[in-house]
Image (cartoon, rainbow, N blue to C red; front, side, top):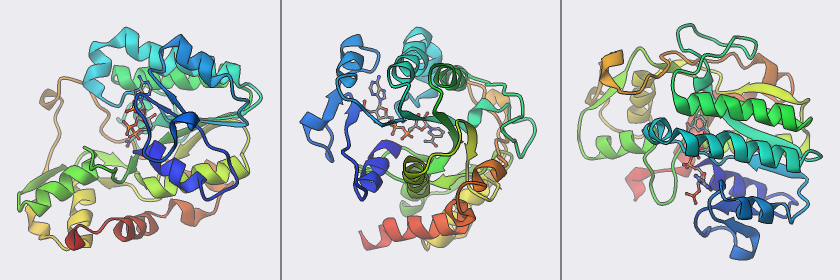
Length: 285
Ligand SMILES: NC(=O)c1ccc[n+]([C@@H]2O[C@H](COP(=O)([O-])OP(=O)(O)OC[C@H]3O[C@@H](n4cnc5c(N)ncnc54)[C@H](OP(=O)(O)O)[C@@H]3O)[C@@H](O)[C@H]2O)c1
């Protein structure tokens, strides 16, 4: 979801843009795509043929179950490939998209100085990718984030799932004890654009929205904003036995550090929802 949004946003600037993925892009022509698996040394070598000034590393396997089962492959993708690219482009600005799930979720309002404690292999390997980036590239910028939005064709994100269920008239359950600080994907793409234009000092940045809320409240907000019946949204509690894979409960982040570099409105939850509303209007489809 993020990669295509970043492509759209950056194409409004003065950049020559290349992309990567396992299949052709609908946005970029094949001569500006590195097509193949990022664990394949040939693909990595091909990427090194271009002298990039900026690398935006969005590639990851976001399927938690898959990461847990295929740990060696996940390590190759999230850590080894990251280390290779960060090192090969050590002169470039290297923006690594990480996750709020590196935090243990047992506390709240995490700052970047809080010790990390990834609870599953996805989060562990993403954290190892952060370390590989910082060790291999003096210009590495790590964005710990959690974002919402939608893809073309429609994907499986929380927002897309909730809208689909609400549209079908179904009841939707949201966890009232799972708290996060989400950023709209368009806002995250704008932030990445701003970083490309004017990079902050290398390091780790929490890149979330300015409001902590539960998944239940988030789905209620979707229902309210998009004209569905708010009573379709039910509150429920997440318990460890519900999932085979451990997940953090409260990953709300303190975003003071990144707000020193970029305007506060870039992280406004209200503004993000307004942008989402403008970009996506299911009632008119
Ligand atoms: N979604 C969230 O809320 C969230 C939260 C925190 C962090 N993040 C991070 O944000 C980044 C983007 O996530 P997303 O939600 O946009 O995920 P996504 O839609 O699944 O996109 C992942 C991208 O990685 C590419 N990819 C996956 N496996 C690959 C492989 N083996 N070789 C080459 N390319 C591969 C995919 O391209 P193809 O399909 O063409 O291979 C796709 O472009 C990830 O780094 C993720 O860890 C996401």
